[in-house]
Length: 275
Length: 275
DNA sequence: ACCAATGGTTCTTTAAAAGAACCGAAAGGA
DNA sequence: TCCTTTCGGTTCTTTTAAAGAACCATTGGT
Image (cartoon, rainbow over all chains, first blue to last red; front, side):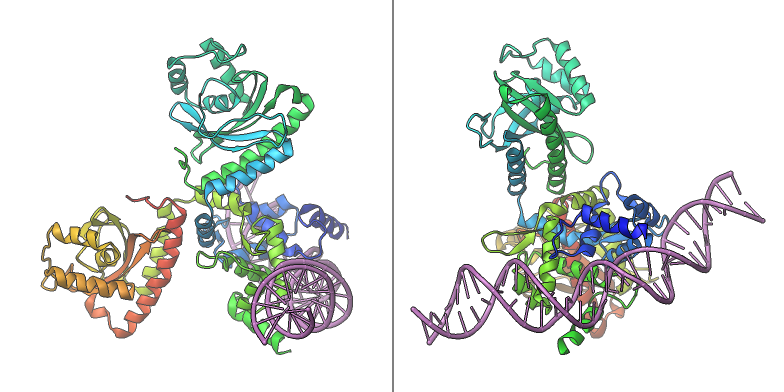
């Protein structure tokens, strides 16, 4: 009895937004499929049923149905399930119908709408950052940047989010090519820069105020390829007077959420799209 | 009444192999998603329900459920549905977990098992064909070829399936580089070769007997990229004495089926993987 | 030799999906 | 201009299929 109630509750909380015109069981089956992530690409039946707190028979039948369509395949030795070639044709269609830019921009615009600040994607090209996609805030006072802008990797949130995840040799190479002071707050001491990058690497994101442009804050996260190499960074930027400790947390949370989405998108297209 | 019976029948025929441990509604929902192909990437509600011969309400709720997960998105103007970014994380996982070879080989082995003959994939590299993946027949008498073998494009089924779909200039360039006679049945007259290639292009597949190797038949289909350029060919080969008009049809049908699957697979990975 | 896992199966209950009938809007033809 | 058809979308009752407890056979650790 208690378990029945719990399950109903879960279903409602989980996926169906209370509308009667979607299918609960399909919705749940999609959630099951969504459990197969990069972090957790294989699942045993019991593992998964425990993780989702659902009777294992339900999971079993969902897995077997996916298996019958080759969307999941079961490893004959370990009995664990993983994504299968049945996804190939869907993926192929999705890829051929869409270009990366077509998909990135709406996402970035969504993020810009939610944060009310400008959003841009910076691609690593050799030892520079190149702004490749921009979603400007609809705010009258907003950070504006143009496509194709090149920045050195030691300066500003978007660049530092990339540089922090390079090897020490590459970092030294960036510094060796010369450090220019752009604003009063720009760092010029190489050891100060290296120390700052280490902090960024620890946190997983970078935050700067007035470093590349006066009066502008930037908050940025790196985007990696499947081999763990940094490819790009996603940045939210705006006027300093609009940022404070409260909304900074919210912006960071949103940034991280969208970084994951964009990372997924980039990884199913050619990773070196922009280089 | 009639429609109820028809639907039940369809369901059974369609996807569920009569086992009680898979879910009909999920199975059907996957079929619905599978309707979004390269040939037919967008569907209106009514279109799709007619095509699948199912009550439009059912389709509607399935589409809306997918939409709620962003797996499908509805174009606001045309009201048509197409694949959306909701699959991105799943597809990304699928891509990062698998390499192209890992996926190609099992498929080719399956085809080899079904036909009892050897199967190989020939990639176009400049004006040559290179054998990049092989699934040998388990038969004692079988066609054997080794990875990395290079063949001229004018000779043999696997090469001709590629050459037939090149431009006339490229074809001439191949011939200009010289024609060698490998077996008694090799064609040496350039106009004879060109005429033969036109026939291959019309049919969509090539068939040869003893042209590259004595006593060996080969049947081959081209693999194209999304821009319609020929990338490679998939070939089934074996001893001539085992082929006849009856099993040739069966082999061709299987070859075509697997060519589609492999084309999908190649298109979601980097197309130029082997070049 | 035991217990606790695992994947898989069966059977009854009950909840959710099916499908007919409906709506309003838009498009097309006469 | 009206009439019809078609579209996406919605509602309500019936019927079907999913849920879930209880079960099995294996396996692996203690």
